[in-house]
Image 1 (cartoon, rainbow, N blue to C red):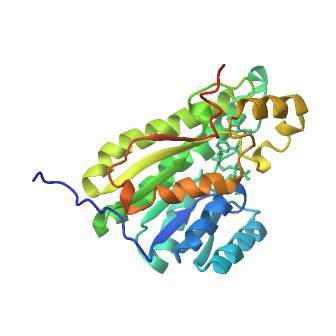
Image 2 (image 1 turned 180 degrees about the vertical axis):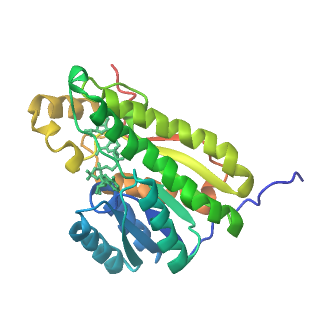
Length: 263
Ligand SMILES: NC(=O)C1=CN([C@@H]2O[C@H](COP(=O)(O)OP(=O)(O)OC[C@H]3O[C@@H](n4cnc5c(N)ncnc54)[C@H](O)[C@@H]3O)[C@@H](O)[C@H]2O)C=CC1
Ligand SMILES: C[C@H](O)[C@@H]1OC(=O)[C@H](O)[C@@H]1O
């Protein structure tokens, strides 16, 4: 028998879960999904989205969970420190961290100025780094294992002519999970990236006014439909289960088959 962490590196429940960017979209559906298991769910939102976050909190309650709404711009180190202080003082260490917050302001390559580049990098990638660092120290000290799940994208594997700034952050998030799998594995904390394909949320509302693009996406998706936030939330929840204990550093595609459907 070799040493190392025990097989069950996550509590079955009741668990404490943080979902960043849970005001809308995939984050909201994920918070609700964890609510359904009766979890204590931290509903993080950026400044200006309290109303949406309260709606998410209501969904968590309806599903049987207990929400805690906390404002923090994940790109802001001081705000993330404060977020961690509030959560730890209220509920102690997390069992599951879901790095979901993200932005994707579509732009031509030659129109991306350094401010836009930095903002996308900071929210998507620096945010995942800051939040993971702020929360995993207490998880390690608690010694009961856990899960770090980061919402990357199919865009970590492919490019986008209007997403030069965005795709690089998603490749970075997938890479971050791989290195952290090594750092945190000995503590029973697995780190995986979930890569959604085309999911109907606010992030692509403007982009999908291009009917030609929507038709192209649909034609590439063997599942025959665009994804819904619940499709991604369900997989995030699956990866939080004890049975996933031996799975770490992985990129998990949730795209209805779009990526493999080349010809
Ligand atoms: N919708 C899609 O087709 C895909 C989405 N994704 C990723 O899924 C994640 C969620 O996006 P969606 O739900 O689709 O879009 P969305 O626009 O509905 O949700 C984004 C969420 O991030 C939050 N957020 C934005 N900036 C933040 C900040 N600075 N601090 C804290 N929260 C912040 C927003 O409040 C919102 O709740 C993002 O990381 C996105 O890149 C990945 C692949 C495909
Ligand atoms: C926001 C986009 O529509 C969506 O996000 C991604 O990460 C996918 O690559 C899609 O482009």
